Image 1 (cartoon, rainbow, N blue to C red):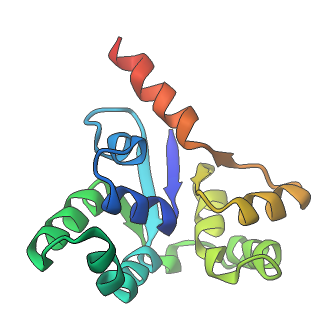
Image 2 (spheres, rainbow, N blue to C red):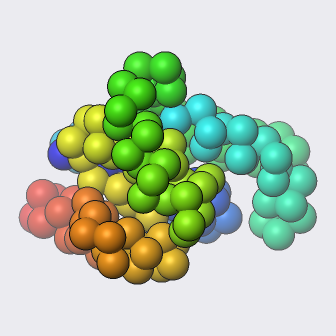
Image 3 (cartoon, rainbow, N blue to C red):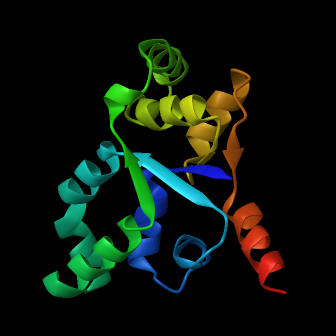
Length: 148
């Protein structure tokens, strides 16, 4: 299954490496394929100091955790997404949160599911008929079901 990972999911995994979110991302051979765009890396870098303060990680620990979590994600260059897919995503997100355009465009392009904790985004896109979301609980059930 192709899953596009949004920034707030990765922030949650970094801040709590024992959470369901981190477990999902770090489970080996789970048959879940995680994707994102380079925007995710830019947003982590932009908020790195705030994350470090909240988490009380040292610079070294934070760097290791970011590297571990992001190593489980395939980063797709935005130029590989067709212009039409991007424009459709932009029209869907422009009055909700334009910062999520890349994630929606990538989700459409790879015919995947978007994993996001952003309730406002989910609600806004659902009102427009876009329902390609997957929840943390659905993903957690998938990986725990496989382990049994």
